[in-house]
Length: 319
Image 1 (spheres, one colour):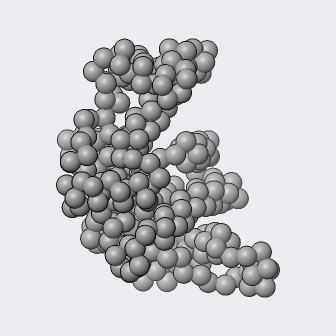
Image 2 (cartoon, rainbow, N blue to C red):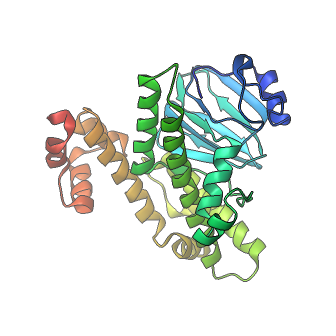
Image 3 (cartoon, rainbow, N blue to C red):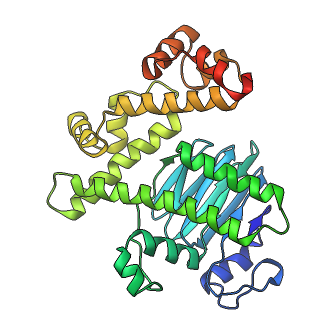
């Protein structure tokens, strides 16, 4: 279900609190089941505060502009580059600033879809055959910034095109397929994070969780400021760890250094802009944090073995 404007906040809080037990959607639309339906909120706003809402498993992201999501005692700044997850049954706040228009594309995964996909991805084939409808509680994940992968961006584009082509009567099977692909991709990313947590060379689970939380705070900062000059001192300060302890733990968890991650973020953003927009290379250079085009060209060529100019020639915007 696609919504192009936020529903009444009091109605939504009550429906979320009762988990849609009355099977009523927007405009008294009759739902097939109780529980959250699949909802995609593609809205444009110059200021909004959506607070105290009990969520299904959800991802929050923007096509353009900025917003903030608060949940589980954490706050994440969202731009067009990243997203964050809110766990099922957590309360969240969505805050959109007034100074510039923000185009959101938030996905609330319906209870049935979430149950089916998470069960399928976390069970053996034999178990799926024996208990195809078993309810499975997916472990809660930490609220943090996640960088949009190319795969996720492509899936979101396909979903937006589906709604654009059939805004009123979107085929349910097509919507289900794309939403399940998006959810599956996100769950796989969550499972990777959980495996990283288990790899920390710390005995106590509570200590591993706290260390991961602090590393994630520094990654949140990288996602929000990747195109600025970020020092190791600043990152360790954000993580509330000594510089050496932070660097050692980051390497252990992420299998790279903080500097390598920042470089990867800059490169991925630059590559996407070169291939998918017609922005001048000089403008892209500044957008990803380089004051001189020559420095940007050397950086990009080092990471891809192809110059920005050569890649631009191969892009669809140069065809």
